[in-house]
Image (tube, chains in turn green, purple):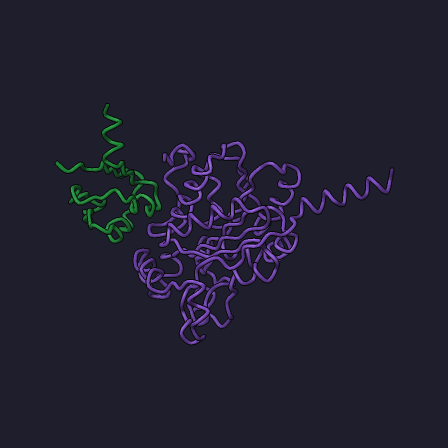
Length: 72
Length: 271
C-alpha cells in the first residue's frame, strides 16, 4: 500500500488565500466554502510546496517516512 | 522543521492580508536560520515602519522596531557595538528607498556587515496604497489615481551602484531561489541585499486590476527572467519583466575590519 503523508491545516490561522489550492503540483486540495479541503491525500508526493508557500503558517506536511517513525 | 519554534505564537495569526507574500518571505528566512543552526539569542532583527516591518513582531529573536526608514541606521549602531550578532534588517520598498534612501546607499557604501531583506510590493500598503519609489510608470495608486508619472527605482541596481557586497533579487513564487539567496546573503561578510518581489493584492492588485494574490504570483511565475538570459534580451523585450538572480557577489573589506585598522593606527601614533 502506498504511504500517505500527513497534512494538517490550522483553520484558525488560514485566511483562505487559495495559494495552496492553485500551486499544488498534484492538485491535492480543493477549495471548500471557507478553507481548503484535502480532497486527494493519496496523490500527495510530500514536496512541501504548499507548506513553503502558505503565508499564514497554517499548513504542515509530514512526509510518510517521518509520520511512521513518529508513530513508533 | 518546526516554524512555530521561532515564532511568538501569542501574536499569531499575523496581520498580513490574504494573498500577501510577506509570510512566505518570513518562512524563507526562518528556514535558512534553521538550516544554518543559528541560536535565537544570536540574531537581531531590525525593522522600520510598514507592513514588512511587522515581521520582527512575530519572531522570537532579539528584535527592534524603529522609526520610519531608520532601520539600517539603528542596525549599524547595533552591529558596531555587538559585532558577533547576526543583524538582519527587514524593510519595505518605501521604507528602504524613500524615507530611508540615504541610510540605504550609505550603508552599502560603507559595506557594513548587515543583511537587508527588502520586501518589494511596489506600494505603501499599510498607509493606504500611496505610490512608492518602485511603483512602475502608469500604475495607479491612491496618490496617483490617473497613473504614476515617476520612473521607478531598480533597488538591486541601486545597491549594486552604491557598492554592496552581495545583491540578489527573487520573487515569492520562486521559494527555492529565495532560500538560496538569503542563505548566501547571511553568510556574506559585508553589506548584502536580497530584494524579494511580493504581491500586494489589497493596495496594488485591486487598483491596477491585477487580481488576487494567486494571480499576482502567477504573473511572477510567467514574467521572471534570469540575469544571464536578460543580458541577451533587448529593452523592449524586458518591458514588464522581473529580472531575478545574483547581481553582485564580491569579496571586499567590510566596515568593521577597516574600523579596527583605524583603531590600530591611532594606537600606534599615540604610543
